[in-house]
Image (cartoon, rainbow, N blue to C red; front, side):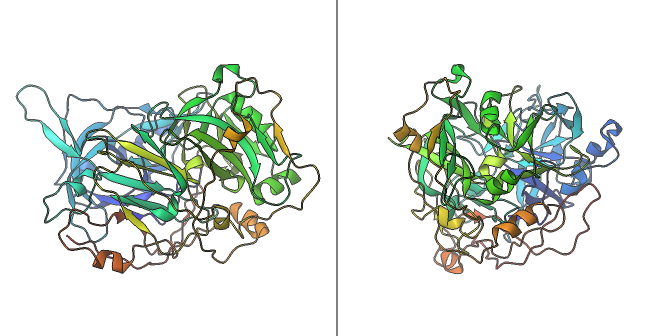
Length: 549
């Protein structure tokens, strides 16, 4: 597979994977995530004049099934949900149509036939104040628990048909064509600014992307209440603090006794924000130079405030403590504020606007989206429990990632995986600037917290590590400057990890334990930036290795 050399989203920028669909090989970029069908936009998305004259979906690519000789769509009896974001974008529009077509996903692989697609002809997002806006990117489904395909019927005597899911197609072929050892994936979406190369493996994962203890849950990550969030804290990894404390706990339940000691939450890479109760977002925002904007349900950074620079450029993090169900310890994931300085662009705003992505959620369930997953690894084995899934969550590294991936194959019945034991903070060294030590820093608690909360020891959670190796670093000042240039230059993909040739060469051509398939970056030619503010990524051509078939 291939990661697109462009960036997408009016609330990012974000990475997307790229596939070719249909006999005409239409190139389409999609956000990886979700279960079952992949949602792909058709040219009809450009026909809704009420949403404006610019077709934002065209940038990521459109697919017209009527131009493909291999497409098969009909009026099936099953009606899929239109809102593939699980309520995060409040998507409205016309119901999608289910069908199949051929995909090409790169890696010198043969086309994948009869792949499950939900085509979307008309859809829009809705802001909290009721304003609608055009969508720009669909979704690449990453499989489903206990299955490799979906069977759809037309009713009456018309035969049913099977629509195949990724990565099930790759894990269930006859031995001579079998590519993956399991129906599984491992994902770290990375970041555009600073440049953290994305990683998506089918049938395995890069151990460098899962640091420290890995939480194991039974079920699926984007299910309502998939994991218990125990607390949210402000922390400082090293040096002085931008606040009058070194750590502030108790933010999750601050001012909201109904939360109690936990908040069941989902992990969803198709949601853009950190979707939390408004009371929680307000408690966090009280310590930041931000202003709440009710139209978006988001908080805008006051970039002229000196505190903004201190927080964004220093080793300061928003820290999430989860209950690790398969462990006696808690799981802690740090999301540096460096990653929480995102940008709203057209069609959401007229001018690029820096924002803090805590969404004061009132319309749907609580979930942690792409803003959180910049710093977290998520994966799943869809058949781990003989028909039901196991999924995993772990701390992900910062920009200093080893150039060589450490690919770990997931076997068919694996319910647990092991992460790297390296130090997390080393993956950020050179990308943040520690503040001078002061006498005011220490551990604090939120005085408005009326929940039962956690003990100090529980809130501390477990130590999480990171991958070793430090690449040439930018200074903190340069990093801050570059993040304001979101639409002017894209990061360099040339250091994106690739599978070692020896890894593939050590595997026999016919094997039930074949290596995982990784998405990789490709060389980019020069693109012109669209007038509505899309940024692109300059890419170098990394080495590519063919899979045995």
